[in-house]
Image (cartoon, rainbow, N blue to C red; front, side, top):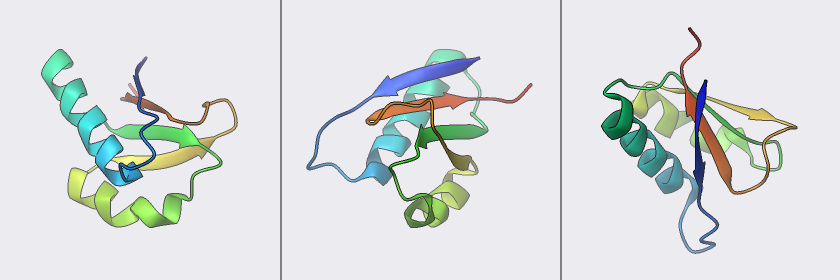
Length: 75
């Protein structure tokens, strides 16, 4: 199951959006997520350092709309 986060602010870096989504997931579920799915239009390579800092895997997928972030755990 995924927590869906939407942020279409063009002035905010994608890394910040992921960070905010992860924070909200932790607040809501009391656990840290393991994965963040993004639109395949986003370049994942730009976020590998952020992902390692957050200890989260960042992937792209065709079915994730742009400006949406699917945060969750593979359990």
